[in-house]
Length: 104
Image (cartoon, rainbow, N blue to C red; front, side, top):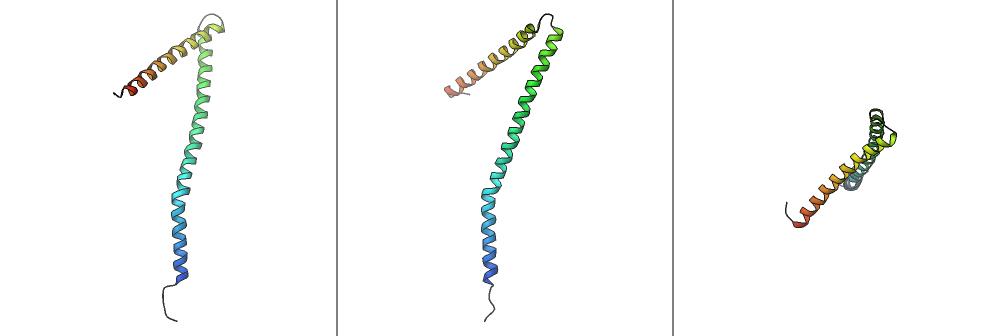
């Protein structure tokens, strides 16, 4: 028998190369997507909790410094949020109108 390349080593190298290529094309992007999804959800939950706590703190602070009942604090904070929401809706409508016209 002559000395030739060992076909078992070549076959093992080929299988390893194919498996590594398949892993790089599938598992690595899926891992990145899963991490982005988990961290995004975590940030969203923490963001919502932060907004709720800030609003509660704002209501309590306004209640302490604004004379009257608690409803006056709710009215003031609700009015602020209503004005901010109206401004954001106006801005969203203006940007939508610009994009429909095709002009920047």
